[in-house]
Length: 182
Picture 1 (spheres, one colour):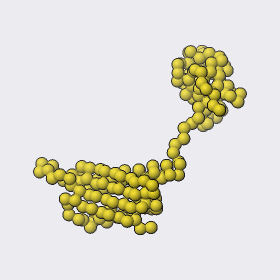
Picture 2 (cartoon, one colour):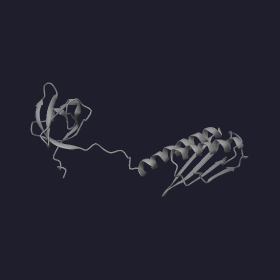
Picture 3 (cartoon, one colour):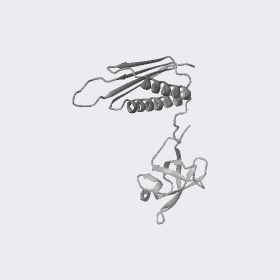
Picture 4 (cartoon, helix red, strand yellow):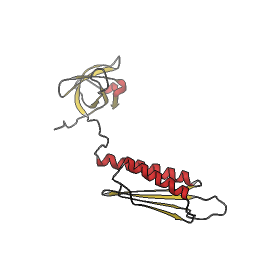
């Protein structure tokens, strides 16, 4: 699908090379996400300073279904670097939009509640029994709050299960009274 594209140059002369570069980058965005509705790119030099070089400002507005992505990158002496930075930021925002659209946002590891079943204070490790009766190993470094030395058999703890461990293991352990999940 061909995207309606508007390119505007302000306070600078139109450049066919810059125009081609913009069209190429917009095409790459369209290859990444083919449902882009519109695109507007403004390249400008906002203020002319005699003691500084030209500072380019790039604004990109992308219309997507139900939303708009807007990026503004300013003050770079090289128009291609200003464009590259603006298009890179636009692609990151477009990727975030696509992830939200597909509901691929990061999910948090569920916290579990259990009780300290056994503890070896001298060697710095212990075991927690979860709600299903499964024992999970933990060591001194896995205790967040208050600290390992304060744990006792029977204490109620909140933790996350480490699925990458060879055997069931608990991480980020904290002590206290917690609501059991429904």
